[in-house]
Amino acid sequence: MTELPVTPDLLLRAYASGVFPMARSRRGRTLYWVDPDERGIIPLDAFHVPKSLIKTLRRGLFEVSVDRDFEGVLEGCAAPAPGRSETWINDKIAELFVDLHGMGYAHSVECRLGGELVGGLYGLRLGSAFFGESMFSRVSDASKVALCHLVARLIGGGFTLLDTQFITEHLERFGAIEIPRAAYHRQLNDALKRQARFDGDYPPARVVSLLKQSSTQTS
Image (tube, rainbow, N blue to C red; front, side):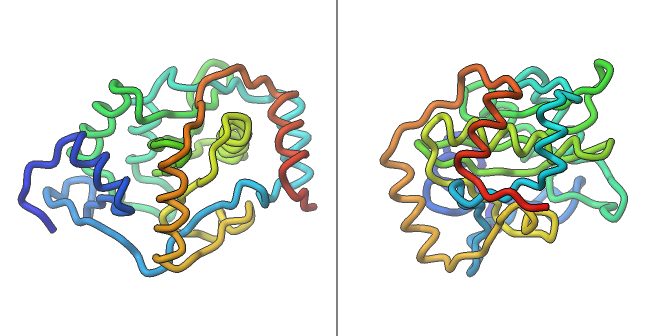
C-alpha cells in the first residue's frame, strides 16, 4: 500500500523492478504493489496453440487491430463478467494506463465481429518484455485470437518475456507456467537490456506461420 502520488513514470519504474499495482475493486481508492513469490509467464518458444484455434486464425473470422481502441479494451477488461463481479482495475489504474498508451508504452489488441468490439487485451512493454495486464471476451474465441496475435507480434518483434503476473486455467492451456520470483527478476533484467519492436503488419497468414514455427500445437 502506498500514499505516494502514482505517476506514469513511477509506474514504469515499478514494472522495471518487477512490481505491479492492483486495487481491491473497481471503486477501490488504494493501490497495492504486488511482487508475487511465483510469477506467471508464457514462454514464447513454448506457446501451445489448439489446432481448432489455428483454423479460426486462418479463416480470419475476427477483424484484429492494434491500438485502435485502447480505452474500449480497457473498459471491457474492467467490466463485470460471468464469474467475475469485481475487477482489480480501478479508476486510477485505468487513468495511468491511458496516459502510458499516449506515451507509447501501453498497447491493446482488439477483436471485432461485424464492426463491434467483442474481445481484446492490453498490456505494457519495456525493452523486450511485455507485461500482459488483462483480457476480455464477449464471444467465443475472441480473447484467444487476441492472445495469439499478441504472441505472434512478440515473436516477430524479438520480445523475450511475456509476463502474465499470475496464471489461470485458461492461460495454462496456452503454456503459462509459474517461476520463482528470483528467476523472474533475472529474466526481466535480461529483457530490459534488449530492444524489441511492437509495430509491423501481422495478417492472419503471418500470425499462423510464426506460431507454427515457434509453438507446440495441441488438439
